[in-house]
Length: 311
Image (cartoon, rainbow, N blue to C red; front, side):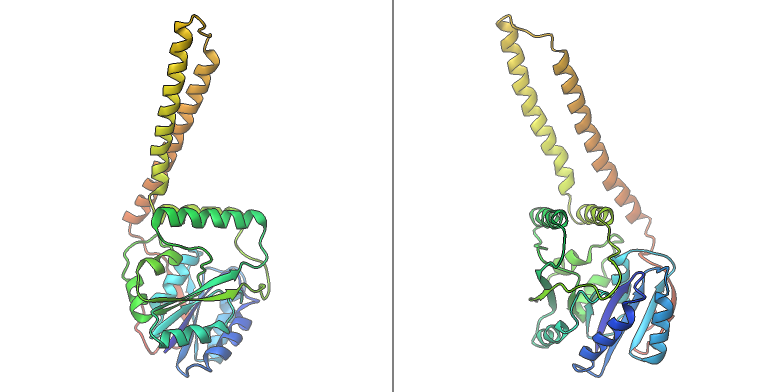
């Protein structure tokens, strides 16, 4: 059985088209499949649309969150409730081409346990966004050893990989990296990012920035090392400035030094505040983890689930 997990947030216009196109591809691969739409607390008619589709098509199921918990939570809710021997995750806006599922499914049948769809091109993106994405991927690669360049959330996972991800106890997750971190035999296929079927992206630059910071701090301790290296650089700078001051004093050319003192105070204060901020951010993440609150709360379900018990 093949399960397709499709997170949706205010995607009322895209859900019917996604259901039709994905079902057309998947039904040609296997008669046993399910489309799981996860409504991430949408404020439009997304849930009503999912409910209607599930009533018309027994292959369609829906999960509705009690509020907006984020895409990561929606993905893991879908993985937890998926019944398939393999599970694919893809976006609802059809920027992930459904036709690629055929090749991904065949690779899985050939023995691949993780099939990643990587971007041959990123579609229409601003220069700032592309630079931001490259910087983020470079930091993740250098700090964690996992290469996320050109990767996406469009993946097909074997049941053993899904079970491994579901067994992870952490609350703050980063699916794109964790699916590589767990290991297993993987294959890659390329795709060109398509235009959105309808509507606009729900990801603003500020949301992407927060998501990137959360992902970096949740997956690597790289920001903590910034404090150490800042301290080392400042120590070297202080030594150089100290030697210069002593030389000037011995030569009788000592300056008043008021500007130097101000600069040193400001620089020291900035580094200290940066360090405290980074440590505080990690402490906040630890605080969120140790509370052990659930990643999401499902308020409603729709569609027939005869393969698994409710989770």
